[in-house]
Length: 135
Image (cartoon, rainbow, N blue to C red):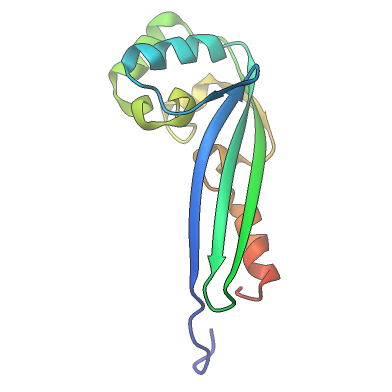
């Protein structure tokens, strides 16, 4: 940013959900829900969707972006799921897992944007800010 340029105000809001066999899965309601969710996801493929809303204050414009990433889980032993849930980490995560933490070992592969699975599709955000000449 040059010395004479004013900062540009952008408000960014995001939320992430999992879609598995047509069902939307958010954060678990409790530990048992987290365990059951992870058992359903193992050895299966699911979609991660992050909705991102950007409000460009200076231009009074609003933009919505939805990013999809396909995640393939491998086999996960029951005891590993139970210990992971006992840690408390998955209790505030959509789909009951955080790919940036221990649960990364559950993932056999992904198709698409890895940061989207964490909850912020950085490439799409970067492209949106470039398109508005903010970056």
